Image (cartoon, rainbow, N blue to C red; front, side, top):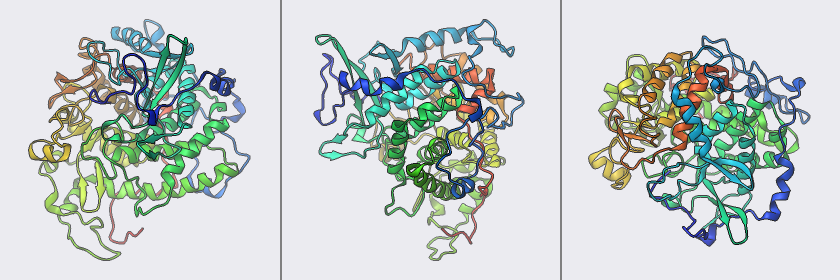
Amino acid sequence: MDVQRKGNVSENGNARGSDMLCTLAETEECDFSKLMERPRPLNMERKRSLDERSFNELSTALSPHLSLRNAEHSFRLTDPFGCFLSPERRSGYNTPRAENGFETHPMVAEAWEALRRSLVYFRGRPVGTIAALDNSGENLNYDQVFVRDFFPSALAFLMNGESEIVKNFILKTLRLQSWEKKIDRFQLGEGVMPASFKVLHDPVRNNETLIADFGESAIGRVAPIDSGFWWIILLRAYTKSTGDTSLAELSECQKGMRLILSLCLSEGFDTFPTLLCADGCCMIDRRMGVYGYPIEIQALFFMALRCALLLLKQDVEGKEFVERIVKRLHALTYHMRGYFWIDLKQLNDIYRYKTEEYSHTAVNKFNVIPDSLPEWVFDFMPTRGGYFVGNVSPARMDFRWFCLGNCIAILSSLATPEQSTAIMDLIESRWEELVGEMPLKVCYPAIENHEWRIVTGCDPKNTRWSYHNGGSWPVLLWLLTAACIKTGRPLIARRAIELAEARLHKDNWPEYYDGKLGCYIGKQARKFQTWSIAGYLVAKMMLEDPSHIGMVSLEEDRQTKPVMRRSNSWTF
């Protein structure tokens, strides 16, 4: 999100930009009224999990009669808590002391109050949370509901047993997906999900409509690739948390998933299974050199594909998509684990690469020039540890560390257990660089000087160690905590949460922090940023009840062969 990005609603409430105005008329609400009912009771006979079924099993044993299933034991967590998932279990934060003995921090109650104040209502129903409640400056687009921003809020409500708002959000964004989307004279794909939406109040007619932004108001006019992935992942989290499969089984939700998948699985000129992206298409929504094949999008793509496998009905329409997903997952797993992974040994191998190799047995398949390796990476790489690099494309390897992509890689099991452990080892070894005084660096290191001018176009907001350029984002705390619990390292999460508790509340929940160690409130950071509040609450609730991780974690597919090293015999 960006304070320089203008929303498409003027102060007097009139919509701007006729090419992209999307409204929900009152008469159109009746189509979805039946979908807004409360979840039906969980059918306990349907709770055998699909989560641990292999890609191979799904591709060879498709049944049109197979329905959605959940399981209380789907995730065998490698943590010391011995947890299990119980549908719609409320958090212990409604009591002075949590059930498992965790003391509730005084700021938790205030965080919940702030989160509830951010709720947005449409015709009497809560449908999301606005980006920020900071009234010190112009609203811009901070008074809108962003798909990616709402995700941690949705998790907080699900963990607290309040699923209705999440269901409403899923259905409203699904409805917006169906609208025609144009930027200038070009029509976007049918499956594109909005970046954000806003409730527009008309006091004259005494009614409310929704308007959506599909990228026409964004920096550079870039459509949000990640919105569709977050939507699928949230649908699966809702299903897992509540045990209610009826929402995902709706024909509208099934169609919405298929439309998103159609955009991602279409054939073209690509020689890689990864998704080619423009700068600014995800959380880093400004020019920051993440064009190409950014790790954030690839990890979210992988997780969304795996979630879709669990949600799609394997009927006539769904069977084709399941087969395509299975093939893509095999290729994507192979590609990401092999070509994006780096540790000390692999760094040394790249350092010794030969170039201009022309054959099927080439080791340096992307023709990465060893002299292009940045000096900082040799000092940054610990003896024990590793991570997925930011980007890999012909003659280009972005060695920057990106938090969101690496944490999602752990949660989705894109990373093998060994790789997940190595990522956590890296965070522990490079605590000062990646966590510092305020968790957590969105990327590391910052780009500066001439490189900053070339890569960002002299962006005054993304100066070194600020905003997306090495800034520290409290929202990432929930991702770190989830990754820590899955890898059996909860003490790392506890240490990071304690750092956040020392500052977040008294600083009024800033959007981000600046500086090498994250000591300073961001120069343009909004206060009372909703996903900073929600990220903290989710992290606390996960530590209180680690079974909550089941909503956002997938076990490794046992039929997917782990790939940790490149080989000169590899071919596509």
